[in-house]
Amino acid sequence: MTKHKIIPNEGEVLKQAKALRATGLGWKIVGRKVGVGEEWLQRRLVPGYSESKNEQVRIRLYESRSRKKKHPERPGIRPISDADLKRMRMNAPPDDRDLTGKICGDPPFHRSALAQRRDA
Image 1: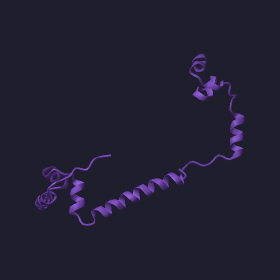
Image 2: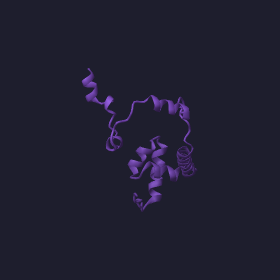
Image 3: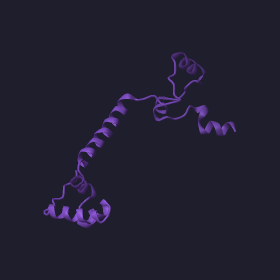
Image 4: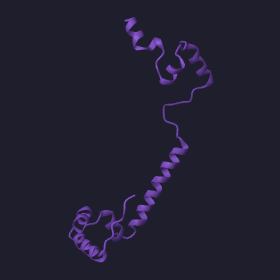
């Protein structure tokens, strides 16, 4: 977690920042000139900025959490029925891999590089 910098002359910094902003400089440049961050300045000088920023963060967090819970279906993907799955398993060649091969993700022998080289 970051430590907050204590600004001893906060009133002076804010006066300087207001004056610089009145000249048309951006938040980032003003922040650099007075030695504070742009977010710090905006939270203190723009009315309602903190509330709107907090609301944006709350909405973003809520959406990401709700997206994880709902798992919306992706377009173009449909669930496989039991009959289709049974038919696909019947048409698949026998799996002759040992337990280690299955766990490690080795391809069945007929799809391995060695078998393809031998067939070519």
